[in-house]
Length: 258
Ligand SMILES: [Cu+2]
Image (cartoon, rainbow, N blue to C red):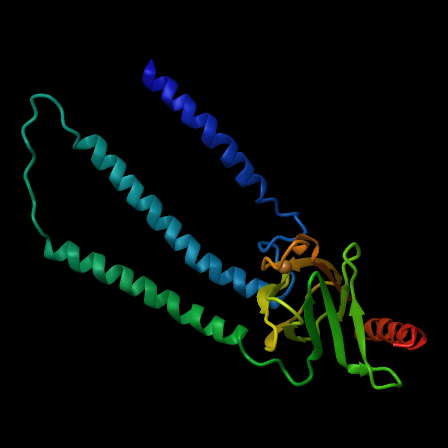
């Protein structure tokens, strides 16, 4: 009876935690790293799965053997002590070689993917400078300039996140930095995260598969309004569409005396 009460007590604690945890696994969530919308996020998810699924399989295998051994060989009254074993060279060599083979097998695709994701952006990529401020993001397009030579600049406000407009299919080369403290640029469905560090440019490239709006946010606690430091990536369905938007914004910027 007492044991039953104890089990009920632990279940009452564990079940809500489990339910809350599972609630975070919805595939439709707008900031879900498990529904990637571009090459970088896809590859990052692939290496995560490469690490996770073998680990899950090993975990289940170990638990099954453990539980079977615990039940089958448990101490029972009147049973003699079983035969005691010390060392088994064959088993020991096997459990050394098997993980070694598994780790080497995983290392090759994983390390090559990490190098691929860390490569320099292609020269034809669209360059965007991302600047973190407390507590807003700023985007500058150094190759899209107005008549005064000032790059197209998009700045958000604390209640309206800035929009980073880009064309679908074209590589985006991000140069990420900060004007004050360390922030972190993160758009979960596209890739990331990348730290924004004052005095330093961090580089990252992205390619987006589908037109749409991809929300992101600062992922490094940077002060009081860190939670408001959101952004939207808006992917246009064509380069022309994107250029039309850029020219419109440039005209607005010139008119504003920027
Ligand atoms: Cu932040």
